[in-house]
Length: 348
Length: 276
Image (cartoon, rainbow over the protein chains, first blue to last red):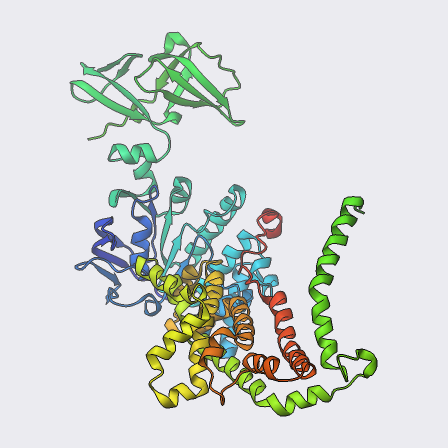
């Protein structure tokens, strides 16, 4: 049941969006999405990610001057119904007046596909999403997860040129979200379709995206692979938004970085005031006499597989580390840390 | 089983008393319509003679009322449903002002509306003397109920997203309107329709001002019969009116509440299990 549609690339050129009330939702954005690639638009609410998706879909038009191209096809002035996109919504947007089968068939019915071919396609889709037994259920008899499967089946049934997903998992509970995320990942790979996925959840973004576009206040903060974004954040916003980040401030001189909690080896140039970042998993708790940095336990949270420890006196900011040790950390007790040498990040 | 204390029975008794107080005149009136001679009471004999007489005298008013009700419903459907859709879709202040203006006839006495219509259009003689003149009044008066009812059901589900979903699947405006919007508004349209027909059949204020001797509706005919006929005929006429209006009222009770679309049973719990 492989889809034979050749994936196409999406180009967004100089697309800005100003709403009638004057709100600037999106600064001029240029973005190339390769054929077959899954790009995740990630950011807090109001960052412009949904607006970008809606511009690609044709539900919003960009301000004059902006262009959207599907392959060689300039679709800027095409309404959504002519763009042949598949769209999945946070609220599912299933039609309550139709059963599951009719929902999945809707796009094909609209296209006046011959009944036999349509039925074959629908049952193929239902099978693919493992919802064959739900075919004649009414929409309000379905659980959230089932609804989103129906929505996915409906969107891909028309063999769209691109698949657009707007926070498809946000309305689901944590366990189900995880499971459906894996399935969506498999589905996207199987289809090989160009996909744009909007979310505010960094875990979803990391797991699904070939590339992530981090957005903030209507502009792109950084574009890159999940690893790039995580390990090489190009600015403070990205560093803060993705994962947990620790900040140290100090003076770099003669190969050492001196901070209030101790000193670390330093490979960069001398600087009077420098801020470096590191991820919690790159620091380990060690005996005090071997420690590079020292601080006191401000709080600790036992999470089962690991313990999260918050440290003070090591930096002007609270330092967060995680350990798999089965040890309890008393509040106020002194703790030593070493940080992996290549783990320090410095923002330009 | 719930225990019923004396307070319950006190309540029940009082409720029944009030019901009896309200229903007794109705029963009396119906009885009068089928009694040979009201002043001698029911023992003078039961007859359908008066009903027959009503039919002879006033059949045309019954048909005119039905004609106007149906025409009014058609007009309200054609005007009110699209109007409600547009009003629900637009969020601006203009839309709200139009909505309020549309609803205004509810707050204005029917007589005043009628007077305004006569002042404005009374000069068009053919129009003034045709039943269409009454129809216009009825549409003015009932349209808000249709609009309100459809607006209520439209606000109960996220029709904009549903429409976006349909559009993404290739459906143009009219396809979306007829396959998504209208079917999901069914309960509101039904409730509105029942309301409109009921109101139109029973409307007196407006109609009394707008009618001519040749365009009498049932309620206007009723007033006429109360003023000039013997009590038995007037009662029989009332009986006919009730036979017409009661099924509508019952249907209104049954289907009068627009249902929420799609929101009814959120099967959020048991999500995990349902999937395996």
